[in-house]
Image (cartoon, rainbow, N blue to C red; front, side, top):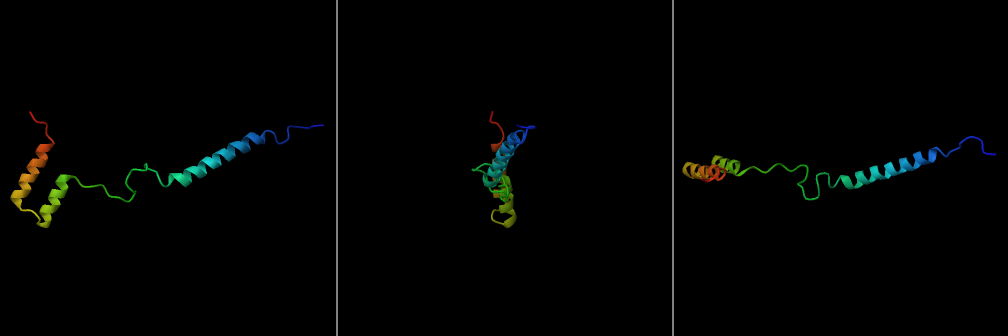
Length: 84
């Protein structure tokens, strides 16, 4: 009456393929928005400069004079050292 196996061996493959397709679709749908996590910066955001770099830029633009630059630089470099 029943000759051979028929399509029974293909049913697990069908369900496995369907589950993989749904997982792939969900990762494409939701993964694009939060690739780095919901609280991280956008992909095109540049890293923020550190305080010493900001100080150098202000000095280069003429916003502060040499004496102020040296005082602030020494203060910033001293902030990174442990106090005795």
